[in-house]
Image 1: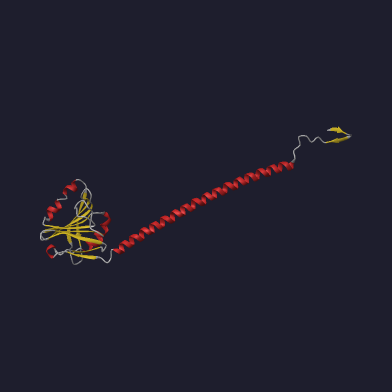
Image 2 (image 1 turned 90 degrees about the vertical axis):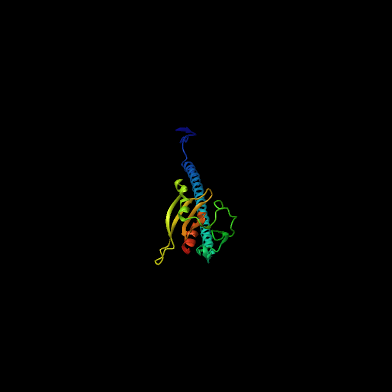
Length: 228
């Protein structure tokens, strides 16, 4: 202490004001709290944005899937009622159902062979082994055994698989026995052909694209009838 004007005064040099400290601490706390609030708000906003984006994407995908399913259902309904193909009697009176959205074209029809082509809406220019069709029907004088052997080179090359089939079997009918070839039939055709014996001739039924295999199996072959 020092003496001044006859009175003793406390020397306050170096003393710390508690109120000032509190104010500084409070200011620091408020700045940190504000920063934390802003960070949390930004995180929440980003999360909401991401969630909304995912929700929007899911809704869009759902609508797209629903539209695709609706389109498929519509296309399937458009195929009905089915039309009926009825071939000439001298060619075995071949008969089967096919979608009404398909058009048919008979390229040749005489006493030795029959070629019929089917395709949705319009049948393309006939180029066998090049242009894919929804369905091709071929009846020739070539023997059944020789016709089956004509695919042997494709089997050996590993391009196709061969299996035996029975078409149209019921409890009262043994069905039509034949051979089915599935795979790369030509350079441009990846499909299937069912080969059946028809009297002294051979019936071949082709599907040239996987897009029509379901129609081929469930509509055409499922309703096939002829006089063997």
